[in-house]
Length: 175
Length: 284
Image (cartoon, rainbow over all chains, first blue to last red; front, top):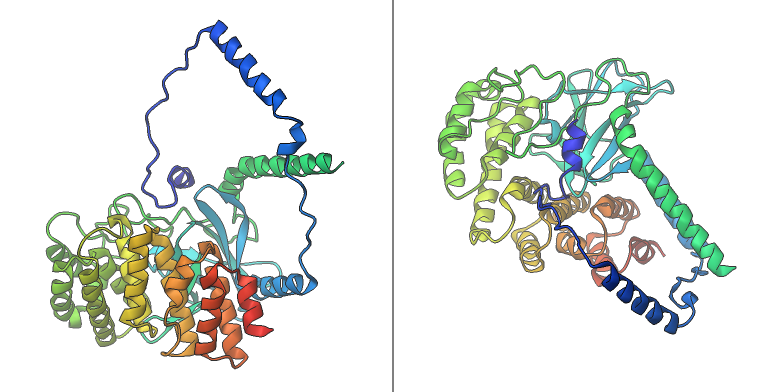
């Protein structure tokens, strides 16, 4: 239900959509037929329809570009995997941490008021800890992982890491 | 044949879009349940409510009405910000843990709150500090430094034209992070001026500041001079900003200095180029 609430808002969250219903469109049938004829005549005189169709782009990316893109993708994939399913103003974000010796891992972030016991991550069958959180797009977030309830760490795979001012570091994530 | 291919390609795209649009809510409601969830499953949405309060995270020890001491206790919306902050410090678990510096926090917050700094910025930083178990004296020092940055920011935002009130807290927090990680007033005021003139969304400026903070942190205090403004003004979507930080980290690891990174950024993203252009400029 919370997601429905989020989806109903625009990216700025100001809920600027209008509630005004459009006025009914009433029109005389014979006038409609006349204007339809006029429009179709205009289209026929404009020439073949293919003029307006987009042509396939036959340019291909260079091998170097493809390799660079692949390398960048691989470098980033270890940190946060974005959910494939995107909906309106929110994105499903999967946070992943490889911590084989941890007994528990929690996610604390500005989006959960830094609560250390809000989001418990789950160990997947193949080892990493993970949790999926719906977050609003067009924003940036700060987060940490908490290992065994006491050790706060920044995401070791995240490229954006900042000094938190309290003797540690946080990771940031932009969506 | 070319036309057929084009139409077929567009049809496939359209079909995929419709499938995703239909599937998304279903996935969102069920997402996160997999992977052997041992407790909690998918979190409820974590976004702020319209009033600026935040949804209660599952498992939070505080009551839903915010009356109990604990995470999620929200300052009252009645009264002036100074009194609300003071009352929150007196009644919350966070304030209780910082009892030894509570008066200092009250004193340093007063001028900032009177200058227009959002109360939520203070509350967010105090919550983060207490959650992380930072020593009270360190918390007071850090928030004192944040407050100085915020008073400066309130001064340059005094005309009230930007940002919108509901996005101000994010901007204040991002600016404090930026200063803490080496950006200077010139970098931030350049970004604010650009955002004000361009009518940019606050989210863009905030995310650009986060990126610039990470880059500055990567290169040291001298880095990221104009990075925030260039990134915000570029044609990149916010979701790609972390890729810029990833390239900066890669550049720093390769021995590329802050000056070269800044000039490559200006010559590529700053001139309408792409991330691939930036990567080529750095590593060709």
